Image (tube, rainbow, N blue to C red; front, top):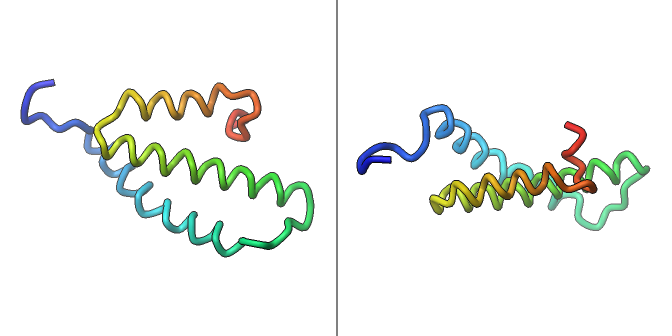
Length: 90
């Protein structure tokens, strides 16, 4: 990479902007569920997925904004390779 070249492609910049806008919405939605018990196993599963996605997206954004591209890729790969990861079926 040469000095003065952008770190991210234009499409990735748009993706990061979108994720940065979406992440606080997810946090607010999760906070609104605080203290409530899921009505069934499916709702419980969706809640756990939402928490996992929230943690991963928050970490991903922090690493990307810090210029830690390799670390952010490892974060996503680790989630995808974890046999207990709810994202593995996607």
